[in-house]
Length: 210
Image (cartoon, rainbow, N blue to C red; front, top):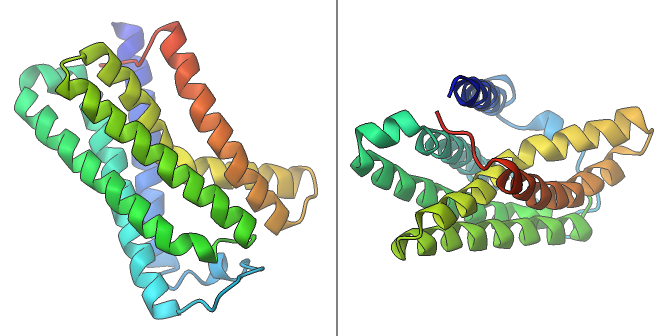
């Protein structure tokens, strides 16, 4: 139990830091996304900045809500205290994922790297939504263990942005690739990692719950 508490605490710290970073960076430090937009290239259509920014704000907000809601629902302590909260919070997570997917779908055609990156983002969106719906289906059928496993897979996609930027940094700064190619590699690498890592967790000890 002590090890589980420790690992859940570490996961909580990562989520909190990432949420704070995302909110401060996108709403305070660079609300017009100038640094991010300065790296965009290969766009197939004109980017309408005011609309794009509004969609981006929604995207970031609901991505943070999804991460927070998912984290809370993996807490065994909260689950034992109130299953009603767990269920309602699960629907908040589901709604947040849906809104993240929809807003991402709007932004995908403007992704750095052009069409090939756009295809990758659309694939990510469809996979995430399908996995999340599967998790909902499993709990509706009272298959608690399967529900938990599919939620592990779904929650992993909350770290998509983090993985993309870490991989981009690795290939751009570490291996000397240009930024656009590094970003595209990051998109497709994240798909592989987000499918492989959760399944490795499930095959070993499953999700660590507090």
